[in-house]
Amino acid sequence: MAETQPTTLIKGGWIVAFDGTEHRILTDGVVVFAGDTIRHVGARYDGPVDRVIDASRHLVMPGLVNVHVHIGAHAGDRMILDAGRRDLFRSGFLNYCPTKGINGKTIFSFEQPKATIRYSLASLLKYGSTTVVEMGGDFAAGDLSLIANLAGELGLRLYTCPGFSSGAHYFDQAGRHDIHWDESKGIRDLERACEFAEKHDGSYDGRIKTILVPFEYHLCTPDLLRRTKAAAERLKIGITLHCAESLPEFQDSVRETGRTPVHVLDDLGFLGPEVILGHCLYLSGHSQTAYPYGGDIERLAASGANVAHCPLVFGRRGVTLESFQRYRDAGINIGLGTDSYPQDLIGEMAFASVLAKVTDRSMEAAKARDIFNAATLGGAKALGRDDLGRLAAGAKADIVMLDFSRLRIGPFLDPIKAFIHCGNGDLVDRVIVAGRMLVEGGRLLVWDEAALLRDVRESTANAWSHFGEYHPLNEPIDQAFPPAFRAWA
Image (cartoon, rainbow, N blue to C red; front, top):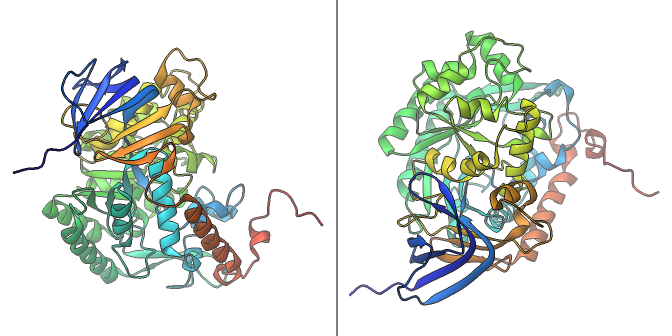
């Protein structure tokens, strides 16, 4: 005889409830769940319950779907704030991702994988991301299942797979950037990723899912992309890759093929509703490409491909999507991601709205409603899931509760506008994934936060102390990336 699952009722102040078509605000309503599934959302519930959670001061909303995350490896992107090589203009990641020589060391080589992965996963969960798409990071010294197993232990919902590509970025002895190509390795690594998917998809009660990750358009040959498309179809899983994220990538594509990255992918038949394109900034017509010809927006929209927008990581480098509103108006599905740091999708949502308004010079661009939808329904659609990103009967019991009694919220006319424009991840009071309470009182229940912070700081400090061994010209870190203020003499 099946065991009866306990029933929990959340009595909310403001509930973001899904009516089958769109989110609505349900004031003083209830959300009821049992096991990993929501049973009821409405004004009241008269059935028996085993537990009641008072959320009368809270905004109760669906867990956020974070569609582009680099889990682990914290030393690189944090290093280049306010600085970077000018020869790598409009391409921040090339400042630290390439190896020192072919198959040499990256700045990540000196980090402790477990410490960096645990810190990323914990941050994501604590700040409201309950479903995360991980971009193929392989920082586990050969243990390809480490990220999946740690996410399973924590309780997070994760899409992951070992990444692969036909080439790799490197710096030569003069410090110049180049790409080393090895087509056979890319095919072998794709096969490895498929084996991983067959073994791990659906593990940890279905919370760990797989997605193929050819690292980036810039590093993948047409043959590898065709094989990836076929493998995803065979395995019935999705694909995600970086595309049109750097100016050198765009320029190389046009110079070598006569077509933009999006145009090439479209001609290959690679694009489709199962594909998430990371960033997708440099399309035809973007002001920084000096390429006025059109077509990319229309190709994306016609294909049904999804875009993962990470505004903060590029805003720090002086780049914006051109524009969130233009993509949305064309019918392109947009999800939001946090990329590398901070892993706070709530904070990211404010940047998405504000940067879009500045880009379009319009206060009506990227409205709070559309940004919230991108972080919930948009991400769920990109993953082909109609049971995530919403509070509705039959959906997964992935729920985030924000404390709206905090001073930073203050008075508000509309809870969603207040949430987007005043909030950040520190408002998160409780996080529930698959019906299990994982954050309570703003604190993780599974892992020790103080230990996480200590371990990740030790890991990155070790990486930065070895900067000279990684840098192609053996330049000291404080010379390559000077501190904001000089040390007290």
